[in-house]
Image (cartoon, rainbow over all chains, first blue to last red; front, side, top):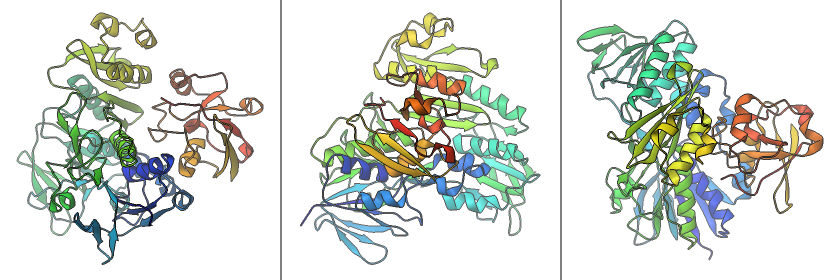
Amino acid sequence: MSEHIVIIGAGQAGVQAVQSLRAEGFQGRLTMVGDEAYPPYQRPPLSKAYLLGTFARERLFLKGDDFYREAGCELLLNTRATVIDRTARTVMLSDGRTLAYDKLLLATGTRVRKLKSPGADLRGLHYLRDIADVDGLQGAFKQGARIAIVGGGYIGLEVAAVAAKRGLRVMVFESADRLMPRTASKQVSDFFAAEHEKAGVVLKLNTLVEGFEGKARVEAVRAGGVSHLADLVLVGIGVVPNDELAAAAGLACSDGIVVDRNAMTSDPAIFAAGDCTRHHGRDGAEIRLECVQNAIDQAKHAALAMMGKPRTYSEVPWFWSDQYDLKLQIAGLAQPDDVIVVRGDPLSRKFAVFHLRDGAVAAVEAVNAAPEYLIGRKLIAANATVPRERLADTSLPMKSFA
Amino acid sequence: MAKITFIQPDGEEQTVEILPGWSVMEGAVRAGVIGIDADCGGACACATCHVQVEPEWAAKLPLKSEMEETMLDFAIGPKPNSRLSCQLRVTSEMDGLTVRVPPSQH
């Protein structure tokens, strides 16, 4: 009987694994199990163009039906994997079936972190992770409505931008003293804060949300000891990895499924890729990344390793966010004590912030500055050293540093 | 529907039917055309959906935006007939369009 690879999770990493396994010549049986009603789709547009209404649902899907047929991949949707039996090499499914596997890929992703504060169970409180979440939000997402957004990270701010564009009255609550505190430099945080305020968004920084008020539906947000009226609430306070299935099977987990540089878990027959993994970053530190790049690249590496052609995973992470007409592109992972070099004038709405560590370029945040991002990414990959004065000198084209 | 043909570096051809309004990149990625990586999902942010348009088509397509010009400058081995397929919006007039996929996007 031919080899059977089972993929748990029908997202960006899962579909990449299907594509890469077939490209690498895998001839055996492929099955992908997903708990949503939809085949794999792109999540990034959900909080952007899809919420805005300018991107049809049909366009979200990563592949057409033909792709799965031609790839010989059986898709089991609306189905959850409930138990992995590593000795028998089987996966039990929510529909009662059991699948035998030779190799298993866990691409289970993350789920939203939920608020537990008083009133958090009121109707009108929304989270944003999947298609159903956005569809559920659309009904109340009307011109003139008051939306309170809890969390000034990517999701919160992208929704704030769309809401402002669609004529909602927007208030953002962030407990830290600046926006995107975990990922952005102070320069980028401040720039985006000014842009949101220009669009009419009210920012409440240093403000902890204490709870929500209302009878059946939410009517107000309680924050900093004050009640703020709200017709709807969007909570974007991060995600948690879906690692329980792996942990229950005895695989090493630590806020994510622990994998090595070949995307292999503590069981050599089981691999994991994407948001659900904890792995070693380029500098050796343990990290968990939530991004398309990691889903794609780690799935490619998992496929290679499953085919007996392991290649060390050490790619530069990259991310992007669209807010208004601003494209924020980030490569590398910034650290608090990096040396900061600003290239270009934020007032021109086109600039980049480089992060230098031990003299080498370690990360870049580029706003409407694609060359800075693209060359920056190459410099990071090469661990290249560029003198600060030269990097900041916009009369020198980025290409001259490559 | 417009039929668009992708020619791989080894000469292999694949024809994909793409709905008007979609981008050439979206159609290619959906169908699993090898070599159209489109890492950023069509945000004109990565230059990994680079294609070269066959000469008879180059003049019939909409002009490149400044953003596309900038990004193409960072593609691998760009030529005058290079385009980012995420920026090519399919119309019925593009039925029969043929593009070449470069050997590498990275």
